[in-house]
Image 1 (cartoon, rainbow, N blue to C red):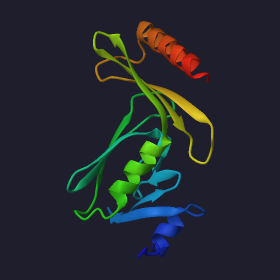
Image 2 (cartoon, rainbow, N blue to C red):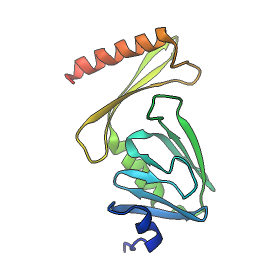
Image 3 (cartoon, rainbow, N blue to C red):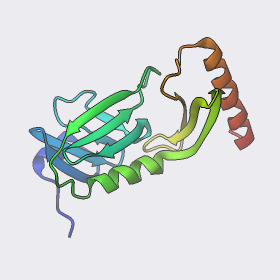
Image 4 (cartoon, rainbow, N blue to C red):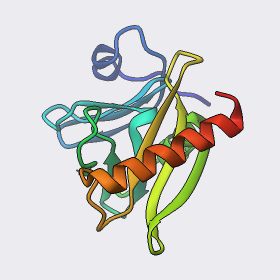
Length: 161
């Protein structure tokens, strides 16, 4: 049996289809077809599925690593949640995986490197390519950046995009 989201949840995401929600932090955590909407007062407020790099669940928290749209370091978010997560973890996992079209790791410095990822932007057929450097590598290093960009160009060329 599918429950209808409460009015508070529907008001927070007007015009979006609610897939799952979880009351938390005096508000709610909401998964829609396009984004994970964070509880009121938690910045950035919402994270589109193609920007979620990782999401993991602990007994009392959701840990989200979200890509910075401007290309800076990913944001690490810790959102307190009740112990009963309901269907939200499965919905988050499915939405994040569904956004990934291509994922490939390249070595740039020893075994460390970068993950090259093509993700489908929610509600679109367009792909957004990103380069996510392994921890410990500086994404502003011009040599690493040039090698990552070259690897990305080779990957895109091999896929014809």
